[in-house]
Length: 357
Image 1 (cartoon, rainbow, N blue to C red):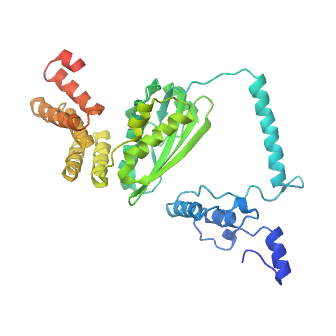
Image 2 (cartoon, one colour):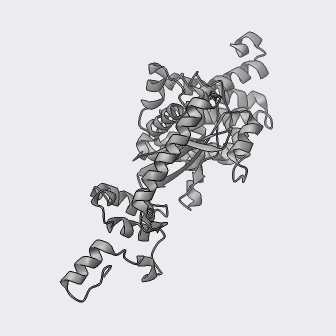
Image 3 (tube, rainbow, N blue to C red):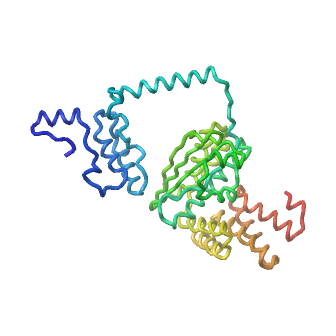
């Protein structure tokens, strides 16, 4: 029992005035964060408890996925400071902070920061499952591609450069200075059955302070739309303007076949590791599942293009060209097939003007 009393009146008094001991003192074997959930459910103020079963379920699901509960509070309003209840102290402190901020806003010189350049750090795999590395790699690649399509960004650092920071201990401000960008995005992702979750935080590269973040949950089949929504949210956090057409283009994506897309992501991961012999079977597997999967054809065209450096070009370039043309017939907005066709015209046809185009 969280509250104790020998008879009704003492029990009621305990409920109203005493804080229950953390449940983790009684149960040492509980998952991390479950104590915070129980503590939130026992808050004195009803407004500080869970307001819906959906909120409670969200935190319980987070713990089931070995993540921290996002809605459970740690009880920062409990106890006293200098003899006063914290619930009264914190509003006073908040007012003082607000006055300081207002004073700085009106009296200190302003140095507006233009967030027109951005870098996305490799998406962290928080599932603990190595099989989800390709899933996170694919999200990282797609987020960069989505942000690159927003013209208001003057610079979006490419995926290959950003992969060199995988597992880095550097501060965001150090990375921003090195890459000469104004904002850094950190993100993590997890897949559980047919459901996926993407979280991100945007950091001011100048002073290493957080600007804001968000989370997107949905079905794996809608992964491209979820990535597009995340890209739009990132842009909005740093007040980068999108045209209506840009917002529509990145968010209104067709559903994918989960099995085909998973195979495609594994192929792209192998391609990133320059393991072409392993990448091609994954792209072919994706196309066996979904013959109209444009991105899989694009990945296949890149793989054959890479092989022109080690195998006879007269054999590889026609395969690369055929896959690229098929990809563009399905989706002419993809960048990779254009790159492959340009390379084929340059390195095989010696068609300089065609390659430039």
